[in-house]
Image (cartoon, rainbow, N blue to C red; front, top):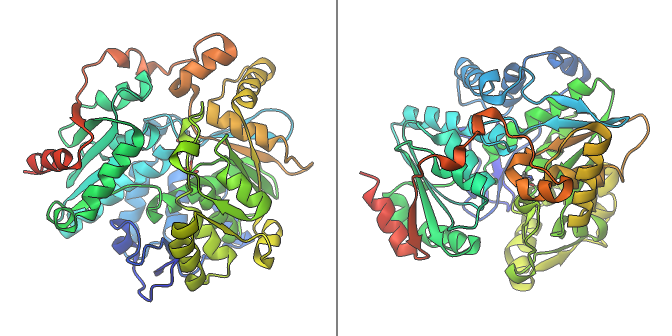
Length: 468
Ligand SMILES: *Cc1c(COP(=O)(O)O)cnc(C)c1O
């Protein structure tokens, strides 16, 4: 299997080459040259496999530069009951008739990002050892991504993590999750500023090519193909557990990484009727699927909401879907995302026949949820089913209910556990959500964090001093 760039660059690469890279050299995102097809007989064969074996079967269609036995061992070591809490790894729970929650957030940091990041940690360790190389991961986080990355990379040989976050702006639970890690290869940098300042610092450091090369700076953001392909697995696992001929999925969405994996699963032949994209007040993607207009928002027009992991101004993975939608025309994607978006901040596919048939060909529909919807959905789900859901999952469930079709089970992806967003749960229900026993008292643990001003030069100094 070879990988190409969504912007038409002529190079083709193997999986392990793109594993440690971010963007393609032309600024595009990597995708496989084609999607391997899975027929009905193969689906039957896979039904009932333990999650780690299913993961191996799917990943091995995309990865041919890691020996099969090694890849199998990596999958087995990653997806264990010990790390993800249940034997199913992604257990399906029924709510009302025909609606299910698929639990993707029982990993170490209680959000779905663990599903992919835990695999990435093991793949990085494997590939770096094979090359005799090292990698220093530099990132910016407002919560979920940073903690998932740290819990995936802690104690891994050949990897260090330098994670910037806005000082004092994450929830106490999220701060405790990250800052209580005592592993020598994990460095928390609390930046005196907002999330955008952290992102600017990461950009400034990455743009210093000499520094980047000398200190082998890399990233783990959601455009990494390995993260995306790991997520494809739970669409298959959800389908098998529902036990129907065809299913639909609703996905609480921000950067389009999670639902893009659903698009890949559907393109491989998994019988998915609809892929329902749910946004919060930051409705860039809902606007696109309703109108064909993709309009990135300015920082000032990006709302701070009670489902903060979906507070995005643009969707970094969206280019992958547009590439497929436009018949894999790299030159056109390059002009849309390269020139046009930079110049005007928007493009409009509303009159394009490709867009007008997107719903039929790709199954995409969308909807939006607000703070009031979130509270009402959390309250209603608690009252009727005795189930407490988190704010992002509530956005999903609200929109899912607008797209039910009789006879087709609707699987809503649960992207976090409610304890991560306790303040809104208290607002909705009047009491704290349940806290898994292993998180009792984490706010009181000793913290390992360095506070720095919003200054790229000082972050560089810190990295240089800790890369001995
Ligand atoms: C990251 C995240 C999302 C959004 O996922 P994307 O892949 O960016 O679309 C939704 N919910 C939670 C809890 C998250 O952490």
